[in-house]
Amino acid sequence: MKQIYQALLLAAAMLVVALLARIGIVPERVAQIAPFALLALFPGAWLGSRGSCNLLARIRS
Image (tube, rainbow, N blue to C red):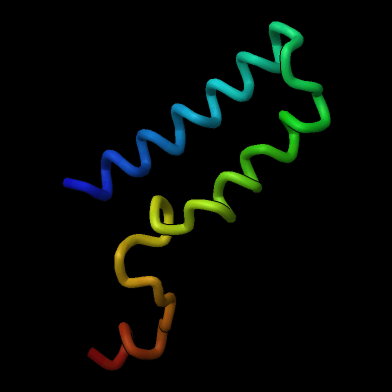
């Protein structure tokens, strides 16, 4: 259940940045880069708790 909250918080942060850019508080260039920066800063929200993307281990098991 914790994973869902992290993903929702990440999505909410992205929406807030987009809305702030629309209003004119955040520069447009920053708003374009912000989603990638947020994903880099909070990888647990989209990678999960495993932290590994080893496809071979998943195939063998």
